Length: 123
Image (cartoon, rainbow, N blue to C red; front, side):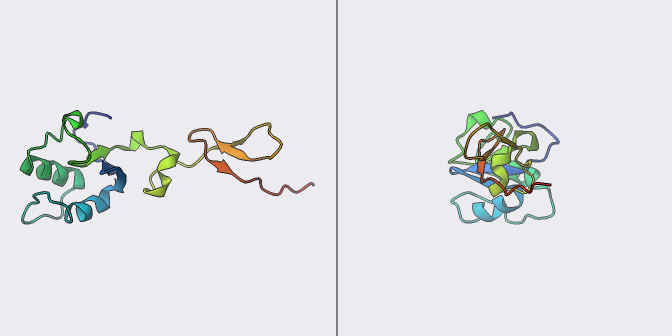
């Protein structure tokens, strides 16, 4: 996990064994036993999360100092891989390649996900 980078806005958070898009994490926290500010809105999610962390005694600037079951840990754009597509549209696309196998299945070079062979037309 990367130490939080001042000025860089997280694209998501890891919390309680799930990845959350940044624009949905506050919604999740509203259902948790975490102290929230009485009023919030209009500020970047990263700024708000830092404030919420301070209210709850969490050192947000050092994600090694707390567990993601207790408080969400930020995920930055450079940490995303194509396997993150299920929870954020900001994840990079799969890069498929066909390996020399009889079944013709393509594999993503990054995450290993398989794609069924496509019909190929002969010119």
